[in-house]
Image (cartoon, rainbow, N blue to C red; front, side, top):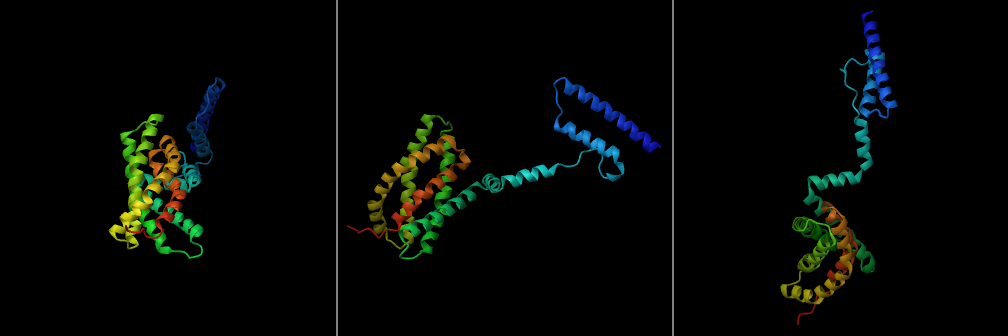
Length: 251
């Protein structure tokens, strides 16, 4: 009898609450998710109190919604999480994979008859992970702090600095790195740079401004190295071809 009396009292309170919320709804106000969940929980606990001995007045957890939303995000959510927790390592690995894929594609296009050179691909992957990936991370962070705005003038300033500073330096390091690992001497490396550096920079000036404009104008700073490396996929196919050319003659 005591239990039935408590149940009736609870139902009475619930009815009063429902009538009150109905009044609010009729006057242009709506239920919140929390109030609906709370009402459902109260009704269920009153109708079946013996089934829920472990809960003490709080609605059941809604963790299923967060788990479903996280599963919907998938790989992109995982990658963004890694960018937040380990940005330098994540960008280095990403650049390494892109450079390895670009070199593989370049070899399939230009060296199909001579066979696949795994060592060459490993050299490119090493350059991406050890040199270009970390340098991109530092460069884009530096530019975002020195020139934080995204207006047209600031965007063109960043593009100019990329073409005048970062591009020539990274290309010089790229050619020198590959030549040194192929056993070329200091004089041979200098001769290669004299032969290949300027034509590569000229061709780069026709390719990179569009990529740089999109990157600096629209892409968030933590995703700019990924955007840059994605553009670099096509560019690196050409770049790895240039790096694989025969030694330059020493005058």
